Length: 549
Ligand code: F6P
Image (cartoon, rainbow, N blue to C red):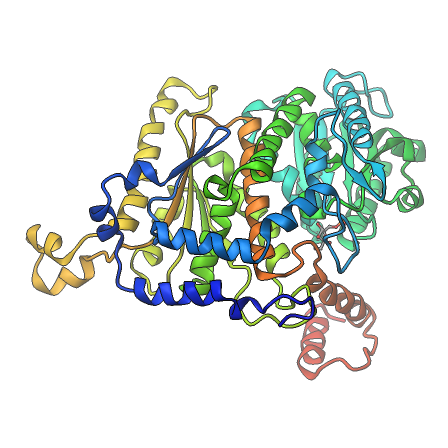
């Protein structure tokens, strides 16, 4: 029994039923499942918004899906979902509401936190962002010397970087190509150096994005950016025209020297990794314009509404979350690949890494006890077709089970030349071929029938039975991006709910931060760090020697 009165997940009858089902399932091949059910290809599909979801190539039957839904019911996933949408403080270790869904709520919606409707505040900030974005885009907002802003540099890390940086890449075809937009996150000075070395300070706007405004990487880079600007413009007053802040912490913003009139606010009920449709998206809004940004929010909302209202049988985030549980908890899969067949989605998986791994990389349950089941997977992947010539070998013929999501689009982006558009069918032929090969493989008989010599038959055999989800949309638009992100947000939610962990804190990143602060004086001044372990002490000594200190 859990401290919260719930039966331990792995002791529930629903869990036991799934474990038994898994044993019975062991020798089933996707080839058999398709042979047994000719309607499977079209039957195991769902639609949410513009996203067509094919889950036919999963190691599941109707019975598996029923048992998984029973597990979701037993763990009250929908109860926690409703509590989230209602603004209850489901982030229990930080005593916070979890309301990224309020960031895309319509103007007339009412979502209360501590008795206060937060929606008017959300729209007030969106309107302020839109006004500012338009002024930068039109040239009305100028730099200190009166020159037009041509460069926008977002300085932030984690959730204050990955979301806008990813979305900027995804929506490049919708951006103002006259603007240079860059993202600096790493405390390695090389990041800021490379981002600014060819920019004119008089034409550069820095957006300092930090929920807490205490993150050492961001404050350090922001300070260096200010020095870079003031070295060129020579007047402290220039900061007001070249720096704006996105934060929940007005006091720290003012302390840094940014006028709070130039601050775009968000709230403690927005988690960092769930924040890019808040003020954290300002750089993106400047790049694509407020209308496109609002289209993206509309896309988020489509999936929010679907997740909130669709029955379990057709609820896509629920399905995707449960499929991950089937593989992670019953098939011992350790990782999950996300493989977009769109070059514009090159940063999508990196974004999902924080969303998923910072949310569900936990071994302590909501009740404070260690879990006895696997939680979040390692999420990884890069766009196809590049990965096909790198690591797909391991997915096809390695010893690990790696469930994968394939994301593709029917149309290439409109601005490509006709010749480049014509390449799209080849891209998508690969997209479809890969999931086919992964599912069905190639039998030894098929290999032999091709005249392959006996000694090579095993090498050229593909066992198949590798599960994939195919996510297909007509085209990549701001709305579709919003739909995709919301889909993964809610999938991660479902899994955290089943595993009974708090998906909204991130205590696991704290220790490294504290230790870095302690070790830094040892590097710079050779200071003694009390209690420093022998390995790190000797590494620090080596570092100092290499630096000639
Ligand atoms: O890595 C920990 C973390 O707190 C993330 O959750 C967050 O997105 C990131 O640091 C940046 O934090 P902030 O926006 O407060 O600078």
